[in-house]
Amino acid sequence: MNTLMRRAQQLQHWRTYCIKQCAVAATGNETAAKGKPSYEQFIDSRHQQAERSIVVQVSSEKSYNELYNYCSRFGHIVSAHHYTVQHEDELHYLLLEYANASDASAAIDSSAHSGELSGSTSVPVRSSFLWFRAAAAAAAGGRRSQAKLSAASAQHKTLPLTTVAGTQSWAPAQLQLLLRGAKSIEEQLQLLYEHTRLNDLGVRMRFLAALQVQRAIAGMFPGARAQPFGSSVNGFGKMGCDLDLILRFDGGATAAATGNERELSRLVYHTKENLSNGRSQTQRQMECIGDLLHLFLPGVCHVRRILQARVPIIKYHHEHLDLEVDLSMSNLTGFYMSELLYMFGELDPRVRPLTFSIRRWAQSCGLTNPSPGRWISNFSLSCLVIYFLQQLRQPILPAISALVKAAAATDIRVTEDGINCTFARDMERVAFGSRNTSSLSELLLQFFEFYSQFDFHNRAISLNEARALSKPDHSAMYIVNPLEPLLNVSKNVSLEECERLRIEVRNAAWILESEVENSTLTEQERHEQSWGLLNLFKHPEKAVIRPNMFFKPRMVEVSDLFEKAQHSNGASSTPSINYKN
Ligand code: GTP
Ligand code: MG
Image 1 (cartoon, rainbow, N blue to C red):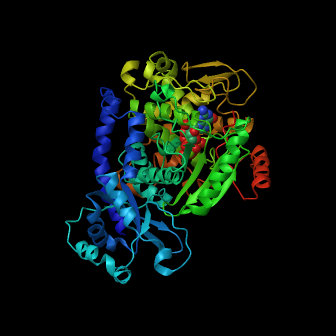
Image 2: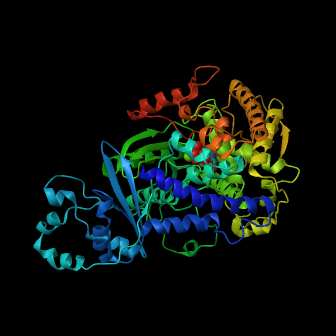
Image 3: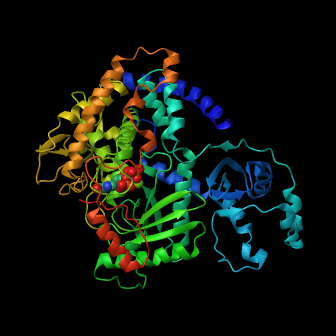
């Protein structure tokens, strides 16, 4: 009940916010990119935030004051967040952010190992994941800490605790309630976005997971960087989304290609020779990293190695963060592609809410599926939305070629396998402004109408050129990979699935048109029945598990791969990232 009341208050807050956002979108006057952090700045600031943070398991939210007082001895706490994880019981966690990384380090360094306390044989690993034991147990733990304990009893003025009702996606019933309470389809679209997108705490938790991996190997690889990418950072992620992580020993993901003093050094490290086959090298290193995660890192469980996929990955669950992680060590293009998506999302405030509603719609009618297969992926869907927004008579997004042309020397990025990911990072250089004043609901309808007419049979979609090209092969759906133009992002999509997409977009256009025409419901009627987007999301309660209407999904390539992975690793595994292009 409390949660519902909290939701109602949030709703009121968001109503005001949404009206403001719609006004911005409609006038198109605000250059969204102005004054906003670049992707790299955003990533760096979140990494630093993780370094200043600790996560402490507590018995309940009520422990907050005591924990706050105790932890304040190590430094100034600037924010505090409470979340729960559903295990056998409900587990409570507090994420504390300090003003400085050294404060968080001091808190971590002061912590005891449970083995020391109980005489058990747990692995004594240093990490940001801690638990808060009862004061009596701590006092009995050693007389020598007596002085410190009395210092802890000094009272600090407690900071307000940000309690997040959840870090997982909303239950369909809650979403129904929320969307029924809106005044228009336009407002429904904004509410859906604001309430289902990954929240601040979700982002913090994902960067803490990255930092844990990075720190685990920092002794041998001080320059290592575990870099989140994909929907966790590109602004298109929803609550509960997986974390895509790329681990680089040399931190190459964000290092700009500038001159380096080391090139002039006469001292050179002795190192091990790499295997001549880069792929086998990566696979062997990943096996080793998989063991390290499995054996030593607190919170990491269900480690699975999918090393035969085009991009080999390790999947695992993090039980303190309630998070699924896909860790890779090769293919930086996914990281740079996330940067492009981030920039497009920042450029116009309509891009993300529109993409959210389309992803939700696709999920509700079973067009997308959490496991990879012959259906369209969320990434391909995002590409469809971007292309739609590029090809409008008054475009809302520029062609990627415009970003490439406007690139400066500092924008040069080439991956180690030679893929050129150079494009302007500063949107001011691209000098793109849209005069399109369509509302979100108008754009949604236009999206469905556009793709119900699109000639998937003969045409390929190019985001680089913002136009359709002749299709170079017989794939059912062809979206030119923006960073590797010889590849097709949607190569995996079968003819049946492509046809089903066409049928569903036609249905959606029809439903939405009737909803717009029937927009004369009274306030009471709107609260009592499904309307607007709710009628578009036909079966939200079955969203994830709804089977394919035309045929039983058979993941031929994937199950093949799955078997191979099991064979080579002796581990049970479910494949995930496998860019089939
Ligand atoms: P969800 O995980 O479904 O929420 O979306 P996601 O955007 O994270 O997609 P996914 O986990 O499948 O992929 C992670 C990121 O890798 C995407 O955001 C893209 O940046 C990138 N990516 C995915 N598929 C491709 C592809 O076919 N080619 C390239 N170059 N990048 C891809
Ligand atoms: Mg992802």
